[in-house]
Length: 150
Image (cartoon, rainbow, N blue to C red; front, top):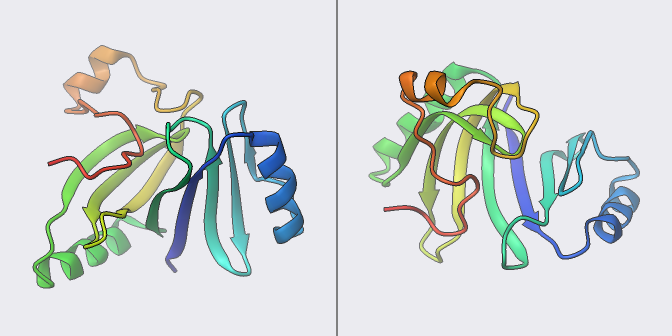
């Protein structure tokens, strides 16, 4: 079952953790110095906040697939609709290692469809050496773009 993903850029992480923990009646599932994430079941959403981007507000939206098959299904729908997307396999972003597809809606809002494969200890970092990443074809651009790369 897929999950809606919302990532907001914020100024004050602690103030926002307090605010969203109150709304969700739950502490973050993941908490770092620059990032927090709630994996909620009601509503079924992956809600993240971070202090990484320069702007504030919506960083990007997305659909989180629970399997490679669900990600393929989402990508096929995008292709059938004639939408343009950019694949980013084996991406390291937001403390996670994922396969992704990036899109941009007509208003310029960035969307990602992704399937998380593992956690990584550093924001956008790798638990693999740079040599192994490059050998695996992972030449990532900075994670969580606020504008869709061309």
